[in-house]
Image (cartoon, rainbow, N blue to C red; front, side):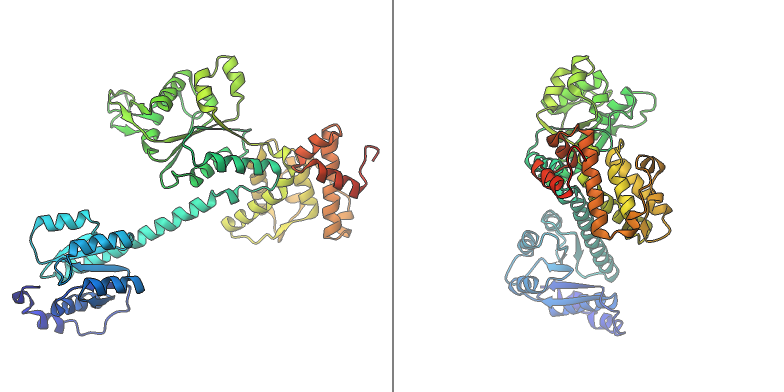
Length: 477
């Protein structure tokens, strides 16, 4: 119960709050068995736009929380049917994201420490200071809204790197998704191999987002972008004074990724000395900062990527054999775009939607000739080149459809101007003509070996045979 002497000026204080309250910005539930103290808090808070509900017991408080959860809660530490600290503990267990502020008439430091340890975001002492309480409520509301925004952004990021966002329905891409599903629950080191531009970082992020470490950090390092001395500092950090420009201690990428995932891109270009240190971390899970003696333990999953043939690099002595065997346990191979031509249309559509959002454009699609040119191009730069091609086409397109002339010159040169038949054909005819030309191109390129042509097109040999029969395609054609 509140000290009666504290409540003596309550009526005078209440009189100063008789102006109409501002519209509610947040709802607060206050559990307090003293009605006078509750009215005082309500008057102060409602003047600032807070809507305050009042209950007097733990039982009623928990019932209201379960039925209509507020934005914030105030908990008096002395209740007739419960301990405020115990009630706070129950709130944290059942409603972990609900900010709670404790109110106490006690000057005991132990009570305040106990409340903060149980998850209270702040505390108020009686008699409640009006300004102090408003600041406390406002800060708690701001923190909870920031946390909700962080959670929303985290969910958006996880969704962006979910398996469903690895665009492509070809068998090759389905194999990649299957490997990610198998590798994600493990903490084993993963090696992603593929040509530049095939999307190795995207796969690494999908592994992180799908795995058990998704709540931790995803930290990436490009091993080819830094000199050897800078790379070691980047990876392991350094102590103050360890070299000329080391004016302060710095945490390296391994420390930053503790509890999460470290992505080592272009590991095939890593200097030999750094390879040895990486091997030690993978084996012992400890390292030392540059210029330091302290052994630092780290809990991190390592995902590596390379566009090089590491087996050949091992044979030439350019890559450590023991490190190769360490990172080669789980391998995900990303096929070049030319080997999964069936994925070009959905990828182009995906990039078109992204560029439309970023550039605030409303380009609705591709003409038949533009799509045919995209599918005929070899894409030496892989998915990255296709993304840039679509971005360029949107920027130069003045209408609502990307035409062949909007594509980059390199793409247009590999696919000479088609006849004007596309202008006369309907959608079905244009698509069939495009499909037939893709099949013929794949067969020619692969010496009319159906199995190889089917792999290049990203379809089964049975489907290819069916399409060839429908289109009347044979070697003589």
